[in-house]
Image (cartoon, rainbow, N blue to C red; front, side, top):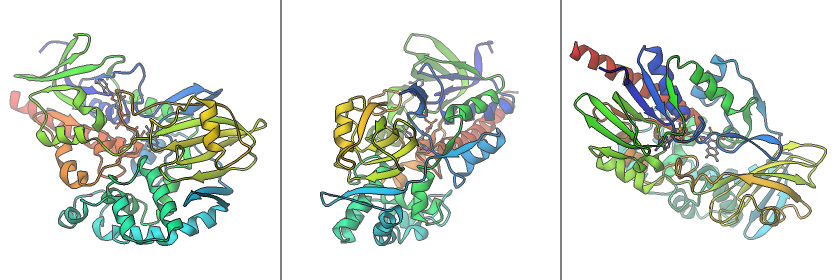
Length: 440
Ligand SMILES: Cc1cc2nc3c(=O)[nH]c(=O)nc-3n(C[C@H](O)[C@H](O)[C@H](O)COP(=O)(O)OP(=O)(O)OC[C@H]3O[C@@H](n4cnc5c(N)ncnc54)[C@H](O)[C@@H]3O)c2cc1C
């Protein structure tokens, strides 16, 4: 076979793709990573804006996330914490309130308990999410929004619980899978407050780029081509032919599409991907929102703020306090509603909570409009777990799909991308070994 033939071509240099490359390289296989953007990292991206290195995508990690934590230990990276909030501001029933963090949590306690009551029964083994398949199938038609309505909670409790889950899903909750909420609860040992902690406190001191670079450096011999957008994957008699929009072609024995679910259908596969895979990709996962950063004046203590999903800003927290004021990071559930670069718009929204706050500058990245992601973090919609997960994880004649969106555990998080990268890497290596043996 020619020198240009690879054992595996990996499409996408996010955490999943780069981890697959490391796993297969360590087994002695030749790999080529084709990445559409001019950088690695995918939905994690450290960019220098507002005078700071800002995480525009995924950032927070936690020791409850075993795969990412193990990589942090392996590469000896340091972790730091976002400032501990001393105050909470929230909007419920159209009115604005403030209190301590404990008071804020307290108001949600009963609603969260009721909502997550059956999580343990349905997810006794969080890393084997389909083990209780029969029972899951019976509840997977339900969204978090529908379940919350059924509980007939007090309006304030309803609004707060709804708002926090809207943050976790980065969308309204009418389509958000109840099973996805249960799975998260199971992953944190049924302590719902830890869901918030895992996703908003601890971050890498040198940024996510330090971690992904460490993994890539360990993928010894992997070839990486940036700014190479794959448009076609075609099965041949010897494996695969992978074509780019510029008309280049590469061949390999196997292929890993390490792509977001929402971007999977951008590539023309020949033969087509299974019907269920294509359906899942066209239905898309739930996230519709955005993450923004603002440099502000007029704040003196770390706080969090939370509002229902119909507000343009659903959540924000202080990431840094300094002589000028500080840095705020926040989220909203609908990327079309707020121009993250518009100082006046962001000021207006933040002033709903803190009347004298002044936004000096603000920024963000529109991951929903970005053709390489078409979504933020992947949270499954109702029915998707039992309908599609198993199928999405299935290999089709040497063609594998990898990514956080298809993980067993922390799907939607960096941890899930690494988990899926490790599992897929192992499966690709097995496939290639079997292939070598039969061709001998
Ligand atoms: C705003 C935001 C906030 C988040 N916050 C957190 C957080 O705090 N903690 C956490 O753990 N997770 C968080 N996440 C989620 C986390 O970032 C992702 O789950 C994870 O990075 C996904 O990795 P991946 O490798 O599966 O996919 P991706 O990172 O999306 O990688 C896929 C790669 O494929 C490339 N690609 C796509 N199409 C093509 C093509 N046709 N040809 C070639 N290349 C292509 C993309 O450019 C990309 O590099 C957040 C995500 C976002 C967007």
